Image (tube, rainbow, N blue to C red):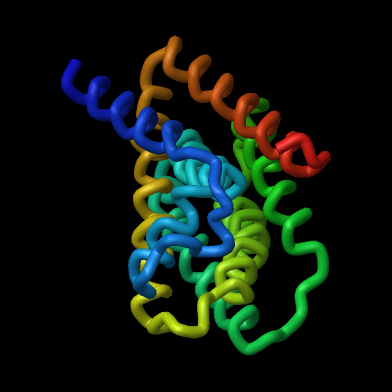
Length: 195
């Protein structure tokens, strides 16, 4: 029962992050803090990061650790591209679609091969990273910012993995698939401008 409580607590922490203008870094005065809170304070990022962990847990080994490693690594590349000013079309659309697609993959219990799952997750990570990079506040330390956003992202992945561990039980599989549907709906709200 303790594991279930821990998983539910992790999910609640991830879900209570308030919607904010996370891309601006307003009110946050250090590179690390700005990078750390960026993914946690924006629902568009929260749903995708939690979804990566959920889908990885749903797929099992080795996806449970491969997907949460692939995402921040590729996100860092996208962030670097954003910092140097390389344009990437439809960044916000790509971020919103990450919630829709990953949520639907979870909701429909899609068992993709690991390389396909990694390509899907990596593709969306480019958009999330680019958003981090282009909106990087000039006055902050880039290394601190990067470390902060990787740690913040990792914590959201862990929240998804913790909740995804419920798939060991039948009721847990239903709950995880339901969470996937909810993630897809939140992503769709961002995609169509309702959020």
